[in-house]
Length: 189
Image (cartoon, rainbow, N blue to C red; front, side, top):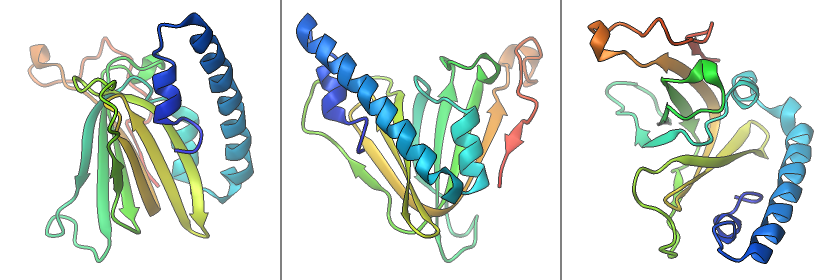
């Protein structure tokens, strides 16, 4: 993570009001810097990645994990990697009660960094912040900061994502029609 670092996040957990004020100001500067950076690279990103960035906000979604898809299920000579996040606390109401399924054709092994600092919460990890970047022509990166301190970075050449409404067990497995469901139940490219 270049902008939304674990160190800055931990500073924001301080009990000192002066530290909190300085951290909040720095956080706002980094948000602006990341937005400027994203605008510069946006035209070089795949359409599905731009759509994901524009229509999804996984902040506070439950981090369900990172998985490598078995080659016998998805025959391929590349590494297929998936991230799943459960959106129960999303900032975008139409995506409440959904799973976000992000699928990458990775160009390298995902990098998972675990901080030594024990100040991160291990219970119920949630998606905090993410950054998208261009690594080289046709290769992109997605870095995610999770509330348990993990920083997950995936380098990839293809990206797809799907938004799947969770089924309500009280409706015998049917989707809860009372909840708004996005017009596009799945999005891929």
